[in-house]
Length: 179
Image 1: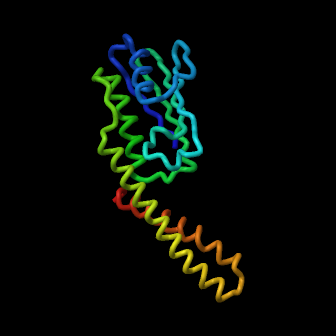
Image 2 (image 1 turned 180 degrees about the vertical axis):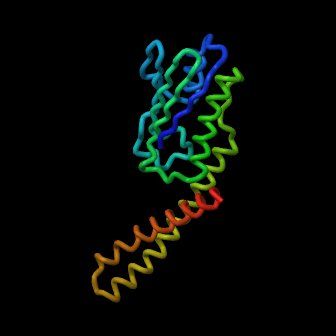
Image 3 (image 1 turned 60 degrees about the horizontal axis):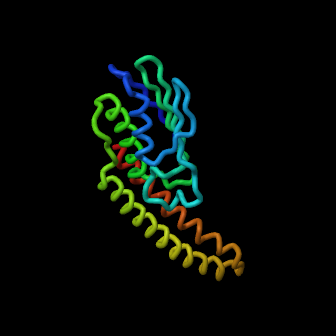
């Protein structure tokens, strides 16, 4: 997922320090610093799929400064993620909080616990759907094995049904939020 945020600031004194503070307090590492460009990252992990905090996904954020204009590019690795509505909302809130933190010079805002709690609850529901899909896939697997006499073919039903249950659930939730 790639997002770009462009906004202007009226006062650019200590702007670099404020940008660094926002991202480092959110557990991002400052990996590169030039006079007009800052680069932050959070390294990817094998367990990113199972984390209940989407801000811990592998990501790279580049913030460029041009006079009083701030251009920030957010590159978030969502390839191996569920990308549920709740997880996308966490990132959207984080990005919009960045702009308000810089422009309004408010105190540091973290994501509210309710947003992360929504992600955790939805993750449990999705895991439950995967388990349900595995059970249904197991029954279908037994039926295919008995019907065709080929056990290997039946083994494919389990991951297919688990993936199908998860995908349908996430897509239905995304469609409901669009409407």
